[in-house]
Image (cartoon, rainbow, N blue to C red):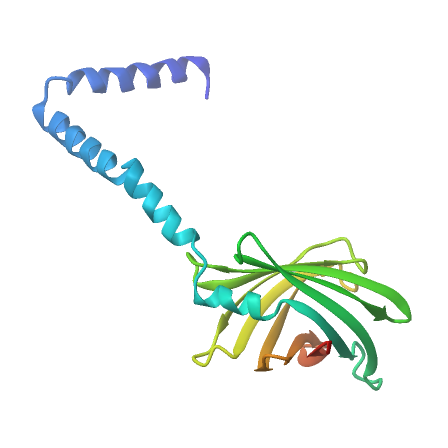
Length: 210
């Protein structure tokens, strides 16, 4: 916008405000809006709301149940023309911030190379969804996922996305976590290959025996 046009716009705005300065209706409306804002922004009410939404709930109890050390059996298939590959690994799960989050550290072998990965999982009380991030030494991106549990609470269906090194684009995935009992659960990951969905990975978790 040129300087002259900008000056005109400013003058028109100021003039409009002056023309209505003595009009009681805008004053009353402004006062009412101010009252609403003051009520909505009441510090005590805001603090109580924030504390309530930040409090761990029943969904966070799952994180405490998963704490400990786990043995992993990983079955992966990145090429449908080849038989699946099986490897073993270990996982250590701990809770963070008074049980609000779960951190998993994984060590194993992938494609004949040492593998390390770390995930952070939470349950967002506002979105009412599980949320997760994952990083590992096989890439430089961060995988983000969100999921919801079924009525039983024993199955969580996830959708996620991360950078795909094969295409150079963001790929979307579907994952399923199934809890068998307190000492066993499985994680499955599905992706598309040539336009068709296929199971790319399954991880069987078994709690380490003392």
